[in-house]
Length: 342
Ligand code: ADP
Ligand code: MG
Image (cartoon, rainbow, N blue to C red; front, side):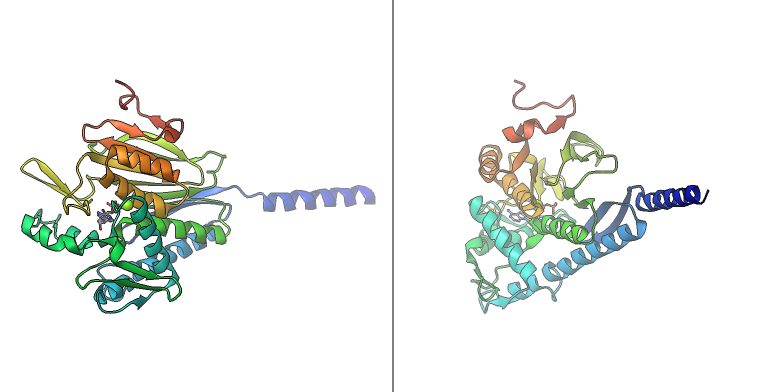
């Protein structure tokens, strides 16, 4: 009897230990307004406390980044660089330096289609009041646009804009970088799977409870809203970014003026309605989405192929064009046509 009790006790001990350790994975989600947009973090965890703690840390990281790179805040490092344009180099923190360095890489790879100094022209357009600058004003400001005039010194960790009046604006790359940083923070906090969405810049890792991958939708650029989807994609340890002419725009005399500006002309780029990029890092998917929008379909697909990133581009007629690598990963809605249908 003693022996039986001993075995029964041990069995109970094993069972209770097992049930303590075996807590069910759940999905936890939280949103905050950061970087001038909605940031939504979804994590998979077996503990609500751990999930909340990790999400708070990730939001804090995005907030920290926002302080460094906010174009409009006089206290940001980006503003310090802009104030000192043509005057002196400015020492910046590792995050700002990395961001400027990645942006410069993408500018070089895309022949200047992505250019953080284009802000002096972008800011002449007022999308709220639906006004645009005169041709003369664009001509006057355009010489201040050239990413090659941003001098980065790796040893000194400084940034310098060569000419007075120039500015850098990280608006086309910061959201993807923020998603990358948030994912790193969640990983360090022991989270096994997560999805971070900084508006249209999303990065995922791990699998949802039940072992299914994260699935994201690609919006119809001329659809009625966020839920009007043209395609879906499974994301496994990948980032995805979309840039479109429907985010900030106005229509004047039948012509659409939007916020993606061709640095060579100073006018909104034509030819494309939306670009989606998929690849390992948000910092590149974000900047490439903007860059390929400017580059147009043919050049854009070539650039994506060279860099090993997937691209889906929607031309002005609504037709889809994509890199071969994307074709077996994407699920198109039945009504959607691609350039292979003709
Ligand atoms: P959104 O901000 O709508 O998500 P993007 O990520 O494509 O769109 O970034 C758009 C922002 O990038 C613009 O608001 C502007 O500040 C900046 N931008 C516009 N054109 C360019 C360009 N050619 N190169 C770099 N940045 C750009
Ligand atoms: Mg972008």
